[in-house]
Length: 354
Ligand code: PMP
Image (cartoon, rainbow, N blue to C red; front, side):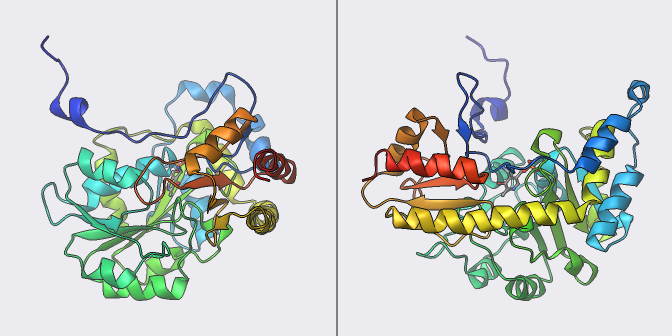
């Protein structure tokens, strides 16, 4: 039968998001959400929203939200771009900074698996650099590969490994003639953001999200910080798809959330200390755990495959993420939950790892 789909729709291999099952209640440690609730000030902003204002389109320039982000990041509002989750912004980075059929986008073999999807969708060649044996990224290799620009997740996903800011700055400087996109989705758990460097380096785009460090994954909001010329490229590409990607509720809630830095600093410090406790407890059970700078750990067990760990945990009501992919199929990615959730995970593991 004739297909009415385009070649892209027929052939693209889309990104697979972590499962959100509804068959029963799981201890959900598979999509790196924050275990703590959003700031009470964000809730206040939500409650104070004038419901009748929803008959209007949202504020086009997102002035209040961009001003709140700019204040938190120490930049000007003209250096801030907001989108429907950082996924949308990362997607827009591809047509904004890379040419179809051009020199391509450079990134690691083991990193956020959305990057190759975006590259394929926008027909941008992929320049893939393998991580080292220990899953660290050699930024020198990334610098050497011919490409129109590079994209680095810091901390990386799904490994959790963080790169110190001094090394990132040297990398941005060494790539002065091409764009560097830093995906800092997990930066609230590492605290070495390169966002301030965007004032110094015109080739740098830093992409962040409200989903992890601000406990607002359900809101779908992300932002980019960069020189105004790069921001205008993102705006031009956005306006070819959707001029209003961030709704009015989201703008109000996220502006209030980011203004409450003290609340989140305290909550994210709890996540970090639980991460350390969880890593040690996993090691005591025989797991090899990569050093994590994120709100998840990436671990493998010498006696159980990654799939087996995933399945045994699922059967015991605990969801983690397993990737059936080269180099990482032995691992599971486990989100750091609340103390109670982490304890539930550990006792589920003890149920089959003796
Ligand atoms: N970057 C990385 C590395 C991620 O793991 C995620 C979450 N899946 C995102 C970006 C996207 O986050 P969001 O779209 O929720 O802002």
